[in-house]
Image (cartoon, rainbow, N blue to C red; front, side, top):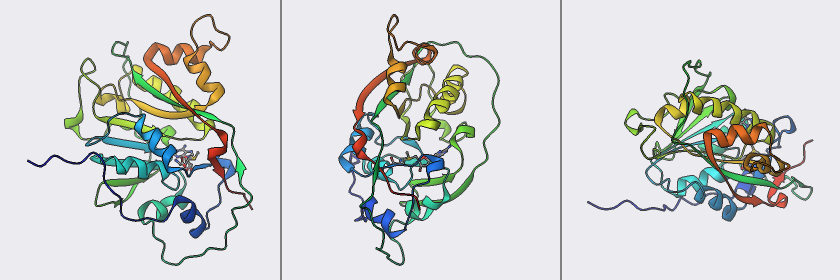
Length: 267
Ligand SMILES: C[S@@+](CC[C@H](N)C(=O)[O-])C[C@H]1O[C@@H](n2cnc3c(N)ncnc32)[C@H](O)[C@@H]1O
C-alpha cells in the first residue's frame, strides 16, 4: 500500500492579499477582523498544532483562509471551518473570482498589537459533570477542495461540535488524544469568552470533547496569554489562570508580532 504524503501541494491560488483586493473585502471593525497574510506564519501556527495529517480539523474564524490553506497543505482527512461573516464564503469556496477588480488601495493598513499563540490540551484527569447543551444553529453550505473542506456559517460561541466528527474517531479520555484539532485566530473579544465556554465543555466532556482530549491551538491577546500560563505567586495569576490550568496543559508557543496582523481600512 502506498503511504499518503504528509504535505500536499495546493493548486495555484491567488495570494490572500490579492483575494481580499479582488473581492473588495473590507475588514469589519464590529467583528474585530484582522488577517494574517504571511504564509510562513500561518504554516508555523498550524505546525504548532502537531501532526494533523489524516486528522479532522475544525478551524474557527477562517476569514479569507490563510490559516486554512496551511491546514490543507498538511494533508488532513477533513477540514471544517466555522465563520460568522458570510462575505468570506466565495473566497473559501472558490478562491478564483469570476471577475477581477484591482482598484483597492492597500497603502493605509492599520496594525494590531502583538498577540500570542497557544497550544491547549485537556488534562487526562478531570471531574466531568452532567448536562449537555443544545446544538447551535448552523447551515452547512458547501464542500470545497474535493470534499475535504466544509464551510459552516455560524457563531462558534453557540456551536456544539458533538456531531461534527466521525464516531470512529472517538477515543477514551484516558487514552491518547484523538487526531482531531481545533485551530483558530479569532478576534480577542471572542477568544476569551470562547475558551471559558470550551473549558466548561471540557469539564463536562461534551461538544468536541465527547471525542476525547481534543487539543486546541488558538491566538490570544498577549496580556491574556500571560494570565493563562501565569504560575502561582506571580502578579498575572488570576481566575483565568486557575481555570485554564485546572483543566488543561496550557503552553505559550510563540508570540506573533503586531505588524503581521493586517487590518485593511474601513470606509
Ligand atoms: C481575526 S480574524 C482572522 C481571520 C483569519 N483566520 C486570519 O488569521 O487571517 C477573525 C475571524 O473570525 C470571524 N469571527 C468573528 N467572530 C466569530 C464568531 N463568533 N464565530 C465564528 N467566526 C467569527 C471573523 O469574521 C474573522 O473572519
